[in-house]
Image 1 (tube, rainbow over the protein chains, first blue to last red):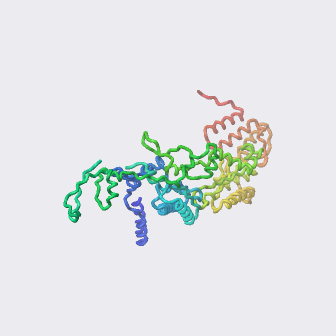
Image 2: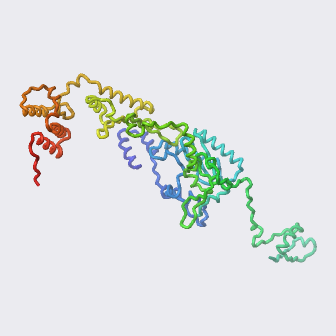
Amino acid sequence: MNNSLIKIAQPLLSIQGQLASWSAVTSQIHTSAALCRVVSGKYRITKKRDRPLTYEMANPPHYIAHRKTWNSWNTSNLKDGLRRSETAVEDEFIRRFMTGTWHGLMCSEVIIKRQFNHIRVAAIVRRAVSPTKMYFLLGYTEELLANWLQCPVTLELQTVDSFQDVVFKYI
Amino acid sequence: MSVFIKHYRPCGLVSGFNNKIWRYNSTTADVATSKNEEDEEFRVLDILKKRDRQQRRVARRADVQPDRADRMAVDQNWGNVWPGPKSFHPSSVPLPLRQGYVPRGQAPPGKKANAELMKIPNFLHLTPPVIKAQCEALKPFCTEWPKLLNSEEAIEKHYPVEIISSDYCHASPSIRNPLARIVTLRIKLSTLNLDKHAKDKFIRLVGDRYDRETDLVTITADRCPVKKQNLDYVNYLLTACYHESWNVEEWEKDKTEDDMEYYDWDKNASKKSLVNWYLRTKNENRELTDEEYVAFDISEIPNGEEYKNAVSNYLNDGESEVTVKNYAKSVRKLLGLPEAKVVT
């Protein structure tokens, strides 16, 4: 696909001879090798077989919709969905904000479900901080995210004693 | 367990005693000796590491409440426990759920700390009793269905105009969807009050929006940004087309037989010759005007109606085996000729 793009772009260039626009085009073309299919979302087996994996990590991406489900639920993913890029960027922002705010506490992926303008963020956290702190973080996260995204945000957390509770297997 | 320890005291030089002290040391006595003789510090070889093996007791946290699901009454109102859409929470659902793929012979992961159960949308807030209660609550706001509109035909008769538009539900901060603006109006042409000329003109005006097979006129509007505007626009289009089709322009009177879009037997030479032939068979020699030819009642000619239909079909539907055979049959009947013999 990248090659075809270049082929399309070249005759245009020769006619117009705009080198400046050409550099702008090249910077947008992504030419790195596609490793994602082989490597991404998969974990290597350790020598001692002591790497803990959650259920989510234990199933590689091609098992989505077979053994595990998506982490983002919204209508933008559907055919002819609206706000595709905005939703993706917002979801990534929510994920990063959650992992940073609940630092070292998150035991699972952040699950983001959207219904109308309501964003529901679900996750499993460790009970490593006091309930008072947890309540503070809850309100803080909801309030800030609601302010940034201009939508009501609800946090639906489940707590576990330690990370050991979410470990599915060791490899 | 006992152990022999050889202990050499360097301070012996000072005290004057220059002899080595041999001590029998046992682990049981170790605690007492270390307590009493604090100055006598020496390392103990703890081979089995008994001291470290002593497990640290995991303190049960007092602030973690037991599961809510364990204390639920069997006859509770579930609608109060789970009033709205929510992600799955194991402590509030008293069901022994399991979810996840595991190799054969193993049990799937339980409901606690199971992210898969939290991901999938649940309908725990829409149990049948809850839906029933909500329907009951909505009932006072509903009106009764009109009794006379009891069939599709009745609805079609009283409400011939059909408006089709879509609403979209989607997850987004905005409730607007550009596709919601499209409005379609559908009406059966036969329900409109049109005469022959007006109907012909109406069909020409709407063009391919008219479906001959279903007799439906479909007008779609999507040029305005809002649904209300498009709705007004389709209504305007229908009204404009209707009134325009009733207008008879001056130039429409110039339409000759060559301009006709279909074969009208009554106005054609075929009727003239048929009428002439019929009058001659009755020995009436009359000269008829064009209007009289058109107005001539065909039903008084035996088999004339059938001949008319055969000729009209032949010329309107095109030449085919059926129309040609029909034509032949009607001509034979009209002229009183015997039926065609089928040679087998």
